[in-house]
Image (tube, rainbow, N blue to C red; front, side, top):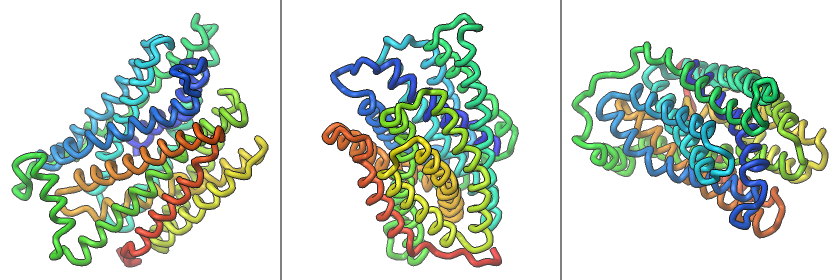
Length: 407
């Protein structure tokens, strides 16, 4: 739960202060002839592609060596260090700033892989639903508190003897320390397990072996179940993560929200998302994951359709509340489902494959979003692509095996 609490500090600052810093300060003068609203989604898309390249090898290494906790802290340290880079680089160093954003996102993505694989080692069944939901709820609380403190640092930049851009950079340094500091207690937990004899001799061999296990006809229902869960989850998470990242950008571009107003909007989302995640967790625990997933995905479809018609700031806040109710629920249900479906001893490569697929799907969605914006001049043009991808993911997940109520 502290891992979720710690990492969410980065995610809330990313979609408020970092996006504002990139769009309003670093890229305000249309570098390379591109609008800031185009540079931002393409930067996130590149981060997703880098994550997709790095995840398989590191996750296979963690499974082979039984070093999921070690891989987790490598990822956290990388992300926190990238925030330090953002804090140190001047806004005129555009490529360095964008590189720091990419590296921090990669660290965040990899940390999510190993947080998920650790869940598979802790519990299964109804307790997996409960713990995953409680973790996301803790994340919303931690993310909100971290964002409040980071915003206070920005607001107090004069008293700290800093420029407005300097205040933002100081807030990025604080966020890196928050992420690293609250992740450290997990170092005391006995997560890592000794390597057993069921693994390949190399990371590449581990990946090939896992791929064969999914494709072999002999896997029967288990193989089909895992493959369906992974494909559907990749498409859904790719669309959801892209939608979350672009929500702030659209608010800045179309509604001209100033950073303080954007922060208040995100805090509203965090406040509603916390009980929303717990509520979806209770539905998943009592009525089953299929019912909980249907509620979440139905809500996301309403959000994406309604987003096209939002015209006022008040309507934007209403949309934010609706988004918050299903924001963490879908991710929580998917994390618990994949943790339980992962083969014994291969939680790392299972979550790694999920991450690769979801980041590739998210990169495609981000590129489509930015490309449609570039062609149409309308920031909401990419919503149709996100909606199609979400529906395809729901279709792939429709045959997800229901968990018996007794489990």
